[in-house]
Amino acid sequence: MKLTAEEKAILEGKEGQTKAKIMKTLVEFGELFGAKRFVPVTHDGHLVTSFGIGLLKPVYRIMDEIIDAGLKTDYPFTVDPRPIDYKNVKCGVLDKLIFSKIMYSKQKHYEEQLSKIGLKSKDSFTCTCYLKEVGNTPKYGDILSWAESSAVVFANSVLGARCNRNSGMLDIFGSILGKVPEFGLLTDEGRKADWIIEVKTSSLPEAQILGSAIGMKVMEDVPYVVGLDKFLGRTLDDKTISYLKDFGAATASNGAVGLYHIDHLTPEAKKLGKKNLVKENAKVYVIDDAELERVYKSYPVMWKDKDAKPTLCFIGCPHLSFEQLIEWTEKIENALKQSGKKKVVIRTIMTSAPKVLEKFKTTPEYKKLKDFGINFASICPLMYTNNPIAGGKPIITNSNKLRTYSKSRYYKDDDIVKIICGVK
Image (cartoon, rainbow, N blue to C red):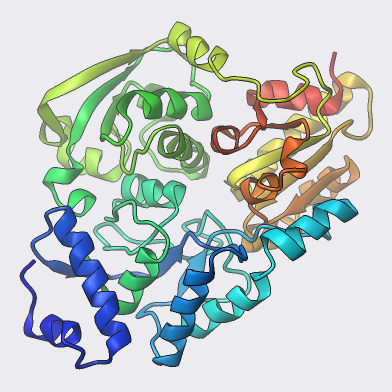
């Protein structure tokens, strides 16, 4: 990498040994992927490591060294959801013991460390930092130092910002240095599509299954999706943004997609067009109703007793948008009328960002869902299911990300509603 005089001085320790280590790490990271230079970070950060797992001792040592050196991030940052919330997601005594004393024993300490180096606020814990209620929403062309696969793919694709799929700690280092190595999805060439995805379904596909199918097919490549605008339209309204949030999360977790383009809809597709964004030798993947059903039926059931009755349902991974909370209210209300019941028959947790829930609590829909027996939290369902006891229970979800990283069983939205409302 070609470093500026300022960057060389940092590497040589002129601004302290801790900052020199950060610079050295990012130089080696950049050179590994062929970067020629650094580019400045232009927007707030987002960190993936939100959980105080006791085994992450090197992380806490590095954080202490950063704090002792008086370093902070150039911009404030948000961070992924907390792993536990005993008030809203009740746990048994043994679950609490494992969570608090074994798994997340350093949670309070780690959050104190985060606050000292630039955490925005105590309400900054969410995987959907880009939602307008949260406020960490990059602009087109912004350079980011983010980690969290679902947030990175959303920022790149729906907002037109630029960010590579960083790992934990690299997100912090780039935010402290205020620079990131330029390669991959930060370059024009790296944002061109390797695949053309032709959507030929009879109706709007389930976002989670469509994203899953694409992720498993293209892996880390960039897909250009045609035919989806027929169902979504050509405007990024709140409903479409919610759909693309879930779609992107599935592409990133069932594969390793960091950027996708939707013809006539996402900003770069609108600005540059298919001709300028798709590589000459791009491969083609056709998705019709039969292909979606094949993908859906391929998901394994990981429960010990495959015929067990579910005891818990998580809706919201990634966190639900305000629009989705309103939509789920109507779905559940209609299903309960159909079943003749007043409350859901399975313990159901809806997860959303603290700021989104704060807004939702002022609506009549919030009271309805509470009356229906729904609980709300801002935790990470994935972190909750990492507990071997909790994760071993028959949990259902409409999240392809949670299905991928846990033993939770995936169902389509309409099926989830019927199950939790006792519709026969």
